[in-house]
Image (tube, rainbow, N blue to C red):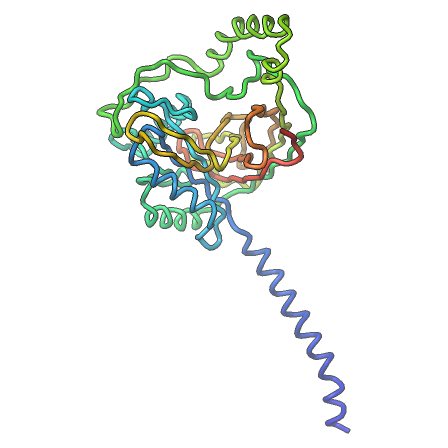
Length: 337
């Protein structure tokens, strides 16, 4: 009887064990949710040392090689190489300005390319895969908050040049910058802000738009029509800020799998591939380490961006310390070309 009883009970024991294993696996999976770590690469199509670094960034994003980390990439094309034979179509004076802020933070001799910045906590040569992995692993040991991105991208609107442009944070600058990988001194301060540039360009932009519409040029008008994404970014559990510091909520739009055929400059004759190219970058609000913070923004999307290759990135960054306190990335969904 005892042997029969034990045999009859065996299936029940097996079921119980399976349930316990599944419960622990579910708990461990939830507890081990990867932490987003922001990896920025300052690069340029005019720099012959940059393509290997672009490859490193792409591989980090694609393979996600660090356990416990979700690598969120930003490929930031600076503009101080543009006068040395090749104009990088993705370059921005605003991104050069962002790199200058990191120069002050890390007290480097000068700005340079390729430079990688991991979570605002460490800087390194962008092509150094080993150093990048170590910096990401170190960043994982620091406390981070939580960022949630909610999107509503059902509507389309027409860009109004003085309040919404495809690159509102990237207004062009005619500043003459040192055409060197490692400049002898930091480039001069930007002459005008993106907002000022947008306002200065608005009257002429409106006149050009009016002439196109009056002429019935439907194709030209269509180029000015694009989707917009209404975002809400919610931030919680932010680590305590440094004394006297504050934290910005920043939104970026990136595009993957972009290629350029370079005709001049150091990379003459090469086809360059890029990952996570920053197409838009703007501060949309401020975050507090006490409680929950949120910010809303209407983010414009240019008509020629590949919707299936676009991601929206949101992060919280100390204004002075430049540390990234939290980040998140989501693919763009529910939009049409």
